[in-house]
Image (cartoon, one colour):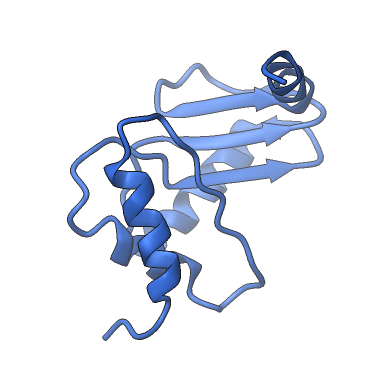
Length: 114
């Protein structure tokens, strides 16, 4: 049974029903229910979503990606895409299920829109 988090669910439902492309960052210490919140929020959602994004302070390799994806699979979640942010680059096999972004590129995109 899912209890509480009504405010967070309202925010996620507003984002899901929006006609705009939006992003939501869910973060917090481990074991506080971030995954359960996401599972509850997307239960009836039929659009596209990215469920797992990771930031790494070191070069992202195929091994890192495989380990992170395995963790998601271990909690019986399926993802539309996996996102990785890195300060130091990527060494990956080309995969359409991955969104990869250098932090410098991300900051540059934001500064253009200000």
